Length: 268
Length: 268
Image 1 (cartoon, each protein chain N blue to C red):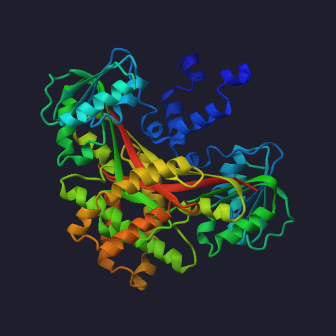
Image 2: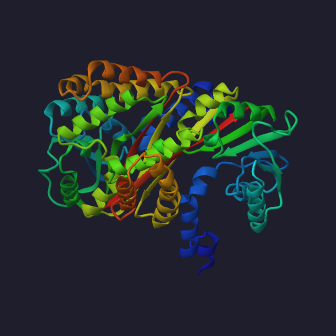
Image 3: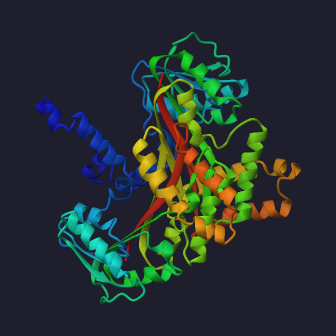
């Protein structure tokens, strides 16, 4: 390897790594989230820390407080962040509706895949706005299961995804919340709301995304509600199994797969 | 206006113009299409020249031959391109299935909103590949009506869009073709097929897009098949009118509107 090739990062392995990174889901969602040195950031609903390590590594001089309602999840998040070598994250148990912080305690709030589970996301956003200093930012990332489609598409595949949407609605959530971020943040009193779609398009030229997103994220999530869908009688077993098989069919060489996340940034 | 403000293009009016341009549909679809000096480019299916003037202005030293099956459309295209002051476009009548060109006559082929109307888009792509020199590029842009959704969404609004899809299918076309560009180009023998989604997301922070895209492009297109939909009995009049009203509802201050185009670039 020549030194100029090294300097420009153009070794074959490095080029592949940069391409994988640039095309990864984490890059798509988080590439433009950077917090300045000393910033106090609340990550609300950190779960098991899937985003926490990425966030903290991207803003190594900001201070994160990552909160969740589940002690078990927090324990996993702590282990994951320690394994990643991040030292700028504290953890605490907190419910978004009963935040144990004084007003204006944070410069920034970050929320990812939380609002979709809440019966009253607008009230949650009002609570989060209260703990932000005036002019502080909120960043919200959510999916939208109604944005999914594929090729070839079948009625049964669409119905399996609809089962996921219906079951989340029965649990009090809204898996179509991505498209609602603008009105939700506006109604919660935030200013300068800017929403950008983050669309995942997958074809067989990207085998990494076929595996990591189409199969192991999206289809796996749909398969996760099989028992509930059948028990509730939303679909019969034969139709369900065909729908799942049809989704896998769309991950083959001539198939394509589409899904859209939405990212909003707004000011308190 | 200070000279430094002038140099940097930061007058208020200039900033607004640059922002509108950057956020426009034309920018979303065409910003990365530039042909080098002397390149011979075939635009197949130019219609009334909606894209032709943009293409020709962006690559002023390339030579375009813009072709269509309709003499009336070509006349409009010629007038539009002349009005735009472009001098690097010739026009000719041609059917994609009977192209009057020798093999390898062009360095590049450009096709926008053509394949969706064809019963055999793969055969059309094979014909286009034949007139490209080896290593020449093809650029294909198509929409996908199945990618549409909005907030608030209703069953009737979805059904009006489905009418548009069904009517195009009865005419032998496929308005869900955007998601199929990768397999179509691959099967037609093209190499290095790279497809990128070009998603239009509209909320009321972009009143220009609410007017130009949501209302005057998409809803107007759906409204255009009203008589056919009612005559064919695909919907009754009351449901249709509610569906259209619901789509307009999604263009209000708290509504959102989503649609995805797909752009493919490949090599002969």
